[in-house]
Every structure is written in C-alpha cells, then in structure tokens.
Length: 187
Image 1: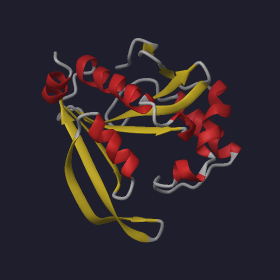
Image 2 (image 1 turned 30 degrees about the vertical axis):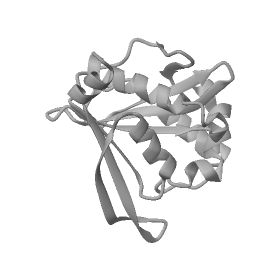
Image 3 (image 1 turned 90 degrees about the vertical axis):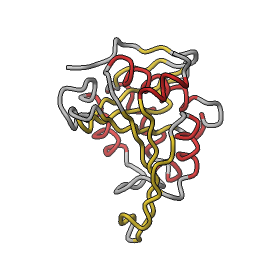
C-alpha cells in the first residue's frame, strides 16, 4: 500500500483524504454547471449524487493496486476548494494519471497548480513513478493551461477520439517524466 504521510502541506493548502464532513464543500462545486462542463458522463450533481461521490472518495486514500485512485481534498482556511487525484495506471510502466477539480471561486490564484504540484512531487519522489499524464477535452482551455503551467508537455491532440454528450470530441494529452520534473524543480 502506498500513501502520502498526511497531511501534505503547501504554502497555502493542506492536502488530505476526503471525509464525509466535506460533503457541503464538495457539493458547492459539483452542483455547478461550469465545473462539470467538460466532465464525461456527468452533469451538475444533486446533493445525494455528491454524497455518493464523497463516500466513494473517502475510500481513495491510498494506492493498493493498479487502477486505484488516490484522491486528496485541497483545503484552505475556508474549507475544501477542490480535489486532486492520481490514478495508478501501470505498475510495470510506473505510470499514473493526474486529475483535478476546483471550485471556480478560488480560481486565478494558482491554488490548483500548487495542489497538483504537491501531488506530482509525491508521485515522483515518494511513489517512484516514471511518467504522469493528464487528459482533457480539446476545448477545455483552462485545464490545458494548468497542465502547461505544471511543466507537462502536450503529447497528443486526438481528433474526434471520443463521444462527449452525443458529439465527437477532441482530446488533449499532456505528460511529464520524472527526470523532467526533477530538472524543472532544480533537484
């Protein structure tokens, strides 16, 4: 089993496992159309759907086997403002996928970048990953900019590669290798 030493602290955030007490904060952003706009297979969530989501996330506190997801709440003094996650995609290839969701009221201050950076640090330095990638809808400019700010390179622009709300959609794929991450961080 692999898990960070909780909590992970950054300059402005605490990253920790999601708890049932986080429901109100998580519902506050999961219920917003602008937050779920680019998410596959979901619309704004009801409170009960958010409760089910929070219950699922409470079990995502460690990586035990390929396919597991580690989901951490990004917390400020105002509460949970979003989540960051790593999905363990391959033990052999030492690869994981990064994901994130943040409340737009906290945008524009680098908090999502700060949270994702801390999780990438853990993934490379503690978990021993070789490569971390992330994907987004081809028109999700905010997500693509975040991946670029993290130092991830765009590896692919997959044209009409999946059905999104009944229409063919493009997908962008970004990635960073451990050696690139360490050299960027000056390690």
